[in-house]
Length: 83
Image (cartoon, rainbow, N blue to C red; front, side, top):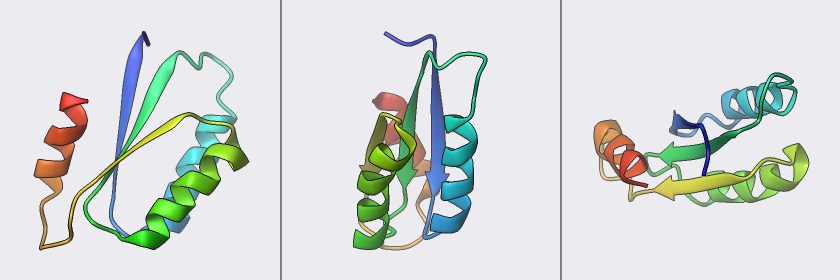
């Protein structure tokens, strides 16, 4: 069990997510948190990036996604919270 959960909402912003994950990798205070990536249907490219990032940054990432049928950020955030 973790002390905190960090939910990162994304949609096709791989470069920005890479900066966030790099910063988390350098975190020195504590790493007692889980990281949930809440994706609003970015597609296969984002899924591959997440899989690669777990190895690259040494972070345990949980990827939660949904089909891209319009702006539904709040729906995917609710799904992340349930997890």
